[in-house]
Length: 240
Length: 356
Image (cartoon, rainbow over all chains, first blue to last red; front, side):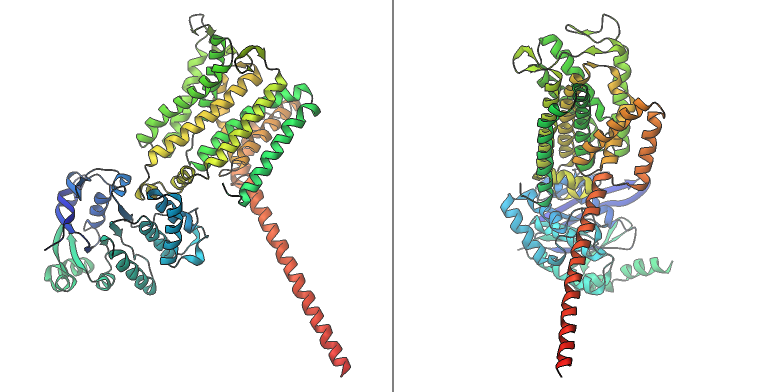
C-alpha cells in the first residue's frame, strides 16, 4: 500500500508578465519520500519552490499541504504547519551567534528548557560545536549553509523543503550535507531542489525534472539520465 | 535574567543613575535641575528610538510624533481633569494607540524600510502643520485651548490622586529620572526575553524569521507600540520640564535630532542613545550661550563626522576599544610571565655551566 500524499499542487501556475515561470504543474509527494527537483537554469524549479513556501503567491492553481490549502499563504503560516524551509541564498541571522540562530528556531515550537536542549543537540548533530558562539556572518559559506540546515532541523519539522543546499560547497562539504539530508529524511518528508547532478546521484532518490515551467519527467535518477529528452534539455542548454 | 557581562554593566549604570538622582538636587542649582528635566525627557525619547531602531530594526524618522502626542495628551487631559493622575495614563495610552494604529498600516501593509521612514516623518510634519493652525478660540478640546503655535500651558504633575499637591520642579527631576531608569530597565529586560530576541532576529533577517514560523508583522508592531508608549512617557516629562507644549515639538529639527542622538550614541545599545541625547542637549545649549556658531551647523557637522569616522557611535566603539585594551593587557601579562620563566631557565643553565 502506498503512503498518503502530503504535498499536492493542482494546476499551479506562476506568471511574471508574459513569462510562464511555472505552468500548470501537477505535483504529488508521498509521506517519507525524498524527492529531488532538477532542471536547467530558468526551468522554474525555484519559482515552484517559492510558491510552495509562501514566498510567492501563485497566479493560479492550488498548493495543498496535508489538508491545508497553502495557496497564497505567508511563509510563517506555511512554517506553522510544521514545514522547515531552507532558501537558495543562505538566509541566516548574520549578527547573531550560531547557537542563538538555532535557539530561535527551536524556541518557536518548544518551551524554554526543551528549546535549550534541542539547541545543543542540533549543534552537536551538525558538528558546529567549535563555532557555537561565533557570529554567523563571519563563517564560511558552507558553514552558513549548515547553520541554516540546523535551524530547519531544530524545529523538528515533518516536511523539509531545501533549495540548493549544496550550492557553493566543496566536495567534502557536499558529502557531509548528503549525510545530513539522509538523516533528516528518516523523520521527515523532503523536497530538495538542486541542479548539481553529482549531488543528486549521491542522494539517490526519485527525481522530478522541470523544463520551461513544466514537469518533463518523473522517475529514478538512472531512468532520468538515460532519457533522451533530459539529455537534450541539459546539453541543448549548455551547447547554446 | 542572567548576570552576563552586559547585565553587570547595565546594573552598574542603573546604580550610577540612582546615585545621581539622589545626589544631584543637593549639589546643583535649581536652574540646572529644571534644565536637566528637559534633557531627561529627551533622553527617554532617545531610549525609545534606541529600542525600536537599534533592536527592532525599525527606522522611525518620526519618533517625536509619539513624544509630542504624549506631551499634548497629558496637557489636554490634565487641564480637563484638573489633575495629572489620569492624564499620565491617558498620555501614555494615546501615544501607544497612535503608534499601534500607524504601525498596523505600515507593518501589515508590508511597507519597506525607506518608505516607513518617509511615512513616519510625514505624519510628524502633518501633526506640526495641523497644530500650528489651531490658534482660534474654536480649537479646543474640553477646557483646553490648543492655542496654535503658542501651544498650551501644561499643568504640573501632582501626587497621585491629590491634585492639590503639585510637584515642584526639583520633584519633576526625580520623576523624570525614575521614568528614565525604569524605562531603561524595562528595555534591557525586554531585549533578553524570547520576544526581544525574536525582534532582534527580525532586524537581522526578516525572511528567515518568517521561515522559522514567526509572524514578523506582529513582532514589529508590538515593538513599535512599546516604543511609542515610552516616547509618550517622555513627552509627559517634557511638558513638565518646559511647562508648555507647542507644535514645535513635531518639527523637522526635532525629528532629525532624535535620529542623530541614536547615531552618535550608538545603535544597538540602550545607554548609547541616552548618552547621545544628554551630550547633544548640553552641546547645543552651551553653543547657544556662546552665540558664535550656528547650532544647526554644528549638529550637521557632528552627524557627518560620526557617520564617516565613528559609524557605530560612541558606546559600541568605546566597548570594543575597552575589550581590545583588556585583551592586549592580558597578552602583555602572559608574555611577561613567559619571558620571566625563560630568564629563570637561562640563568639556571648558566649556573649549571658555571658549576661544571
